Image: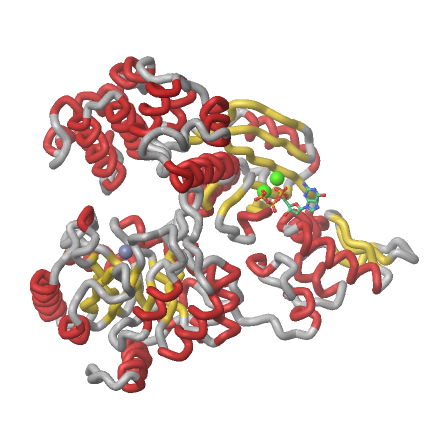
Length: 587
Ligand code: DGT
Ligand code: CA
Ligand code: CA
Ligand code: ZN
């Protein structure tokens, strides 16, 4: 069974926290919120902690909450949660933990306007009743409507990272049948789009085994509803961590495999364009092969490369198949050589227990050295403006630098780079003094406040600081939760280029910031990019995979990505900026 029990419990605790807040019980709300974060960040399955008895010793989790975790593990339910659910209108239960709305706001709307359904809520937001409540105003109402709209969209689409994990599980399970001879994920997931509508899987098997495979697939315990079931295609709705996810499986023959891969990888626009090109050449392309229209003879279909070659194109990496010029480039043999995961030499955005990370620098370094072939990592904890993360002031940063120095000495290597994620303040100045920034190896500057205003000027001012290496998560969007703040991207790109500041591709699954379109623009403008995981936990280092995928969707090659280079080369890049802006260079 596909499950992440830590996440299931964390989700319930977040709901409980929100309900407690709705009920004006701040104390319990905070306790459950904290417990949710702790459970989600545990390195092992909570069941393991129960078995070893460690569950009752986890810091930040009191005995009454630990008992509830035990109850959930044993019964699949938390009776307190079942009780709490009844104290809030059904529709509000769904909305109560939505960022951008909040339990307190819902409570006031409930008390003061007598509203208890989503439909009524939207109506009252639109007809001015909410706006007229003291302390609300048009801006707040607008933001609430936006949050509701983003939520509805996010319910229909899966984050790339989650879809990848689910698809890996499904492919492994299907592969247990020896009748499955070839299997591949296709659709938007193969193209590595940042969100995925449904998961599409292709299989090759002998004709007589098709129904056996389909019986097996539609019988998975996660399957909640079978939409279609046949020898060629089955489509199901799965219940995954309480959310509905559609999965389509299609079965083809060996000599159709390449054509089917090509067709079902899409995108639709890419396929439409490809068929146009084929038509001009007197060819027809469908999911079974490429055919000569005059003779009706099949000329390709077994391999995907064969399909593209038959219409006069080079094979096109799936990440590029959005009809954004890749077909023309493939025709003229000028497709870019895209960056690959193995090109990455280090991760340059990592949080430790010095601020809001879950592990100490030493634990992080041990883990990364064991699991990754990196030449360096940068520890980049928050600066003081980020109070919720206990951001560091100058003195603390200097202490953290001392610890890194000590750890490097123990390693006998200059593996850990001394970094920071410094806040860009309201006026574009930075949250730490230049004297301290000058001593650091790597400086990320990020916007974490005033997220609704145009932030172009703030970010440009930050880039003009000689010590800023890169702008973190440049557009500030959170998928399904928050739109990017308004930015004049032309101006940002121009300033990045002129100052020699890199832009980040933040690979946190809900950020994926920059997006593919802006990466492409950066590549075209010659702006340097950095792919980072923004790790707060050991498991997060694996997000590098989707960060690289996003870079590929933006046509980035190895040359466009700074952290494919040795540290010496990175330092040259940074010193060039310092020199140009008249600051002291670092060695
Ligand atoms: P998604 O699921 O919304 O993230 O996007 P896709 O691209 O995975 O779209 P999906 O699942 O509807 O279809 C999978 C691929 O099948 C799609 O990328 C292109 C290919 N395809 C080509 N022509 C058609 C068509 O007429 N209907 C459908 N459903 N798919 C088509
Ligand atoms: Ca799909
Ligand atoms: Ca589909
Ligand atoms: Zn960060």
